[in-house]
Length: 241
Image 1 (cartoon, helix red, strand yellow):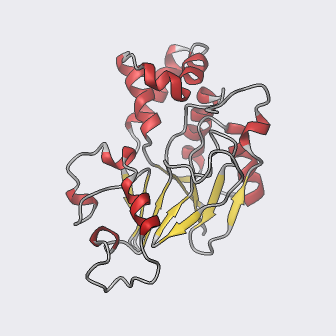
Image 2: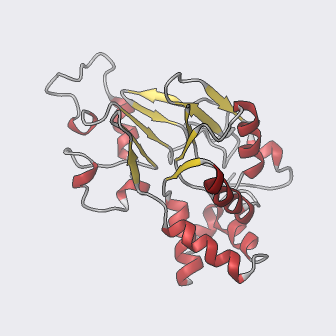
C-alpha cells in the first residue's frame, strides 16, 4: 500500500483527476489530502462532490485548510468576508449558486468533518499550515494555527542544513516528528515547481491555484506525480492569479 499525500487543489478538479491517472491511484492506496479543496478555479462544488465520493471508496484522510474553513463560514453561517472573495472565494460562491440545498448540506458536513492534523504510526505529521508550540501539536493554543500558520515553513527554510537534530539549537518543535507534510504556502506562484523539503518538512503546495501544477507525493519513495499547470486546464479563468 502506498501513502500518497496531495497538495492544495483549489477547485482544480481537472488537475486532480489528471494526477490520479498519472499516479495510477487505486483503492489499495492511502490518500492524505492537505486541505484547501476550494477557492480558485470554477469547479468548487464538483471538487468536493468528487472527494466525498472518493472517501466512500478509498482510504482517505482529509485535512482542513484555511480556505475550507472560510468557505464553511460562508456556507453554514452566511459570514460575509470580502477578503475571502478576493482570494478565490468569488469563484467558489459562483459555483455554489448552482448547487441545491442537499448538496450544500452534504458539503457542510464534509467541511465540518475535516481534521486539523494527522500523525501516522511512524510519527509523520500531516497538516495544512503549521504549528508554533515547542512541545508539539497537542499543546497548540489556537486551532486556527494549524491551517493559517506560515512560520513553520519559514523556520524550516531558514535552518542551517548542517545543524543536527541533537544540537541544542535545533528547533524543538521539529524534533517531535520524523517528517512533517504541509501545504498552504505555495513554493512558487508563477513557475512549475516540485514538492520541496527543508529540514524534515515537506511542502507539497506547488501553486495549483496560480500557474503551477497540482502535486502528489509518495511519502515513502518520495516519487512525485504532477498534473499539467492547472491554469492551462481552465483557459479563460483567472484562478487566483
